[in-house]
View (cartoon, helix red, strand yellow):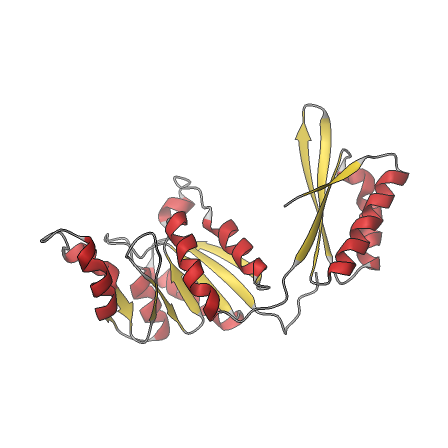
Length: 252
């Protein structure tokens, strides 16, 4: 699918040693991509960085200059290695301090004496930031310019996206059609390339898989023009049928 400069774009910056070590499997990227896709925002790049402030700052500055929006996940909790807030402040060149609204959200959640110094860290925000609330926990994320800083826990992150949605400039939603066929992709690669040339307004992806009964493939057509998506999908189905291969549509 050809990038359209008129449509909003996004990058996702995933922060955490636990992701890079393999201890934790990231699920946030898929959730954010689906959320943004439903609003017509193309996710064009994703990066994973360590819990190192300088690396977070460098990645954030590169991404926010290139894309309409940047979404970060992770590193805004109460522990010593939660350094995303400080990194965002440094990237924007602004101080970080306790936010009165965030403190007011957090303090009632704890028994007297339990809202300790480390838990108070979750109320620190860069100057000028706007809170991102969620209905799962009181701990907020925040939004500054084109950067949205979200929790690393999937359930909380999803809830934060609900608060983010009204703040976004929407694009035209991406339409998709998925065709499943029991055929090796090498047998149809040349025809897929021809169909792609004939339908330049869509992107055709081939995703091979294997099972006990042999190879099969999911062929995914994506684009913003629903008619073009359907025309390309039908061209693929016709090619499969001519080759004696059965196929069926799959719901995403």
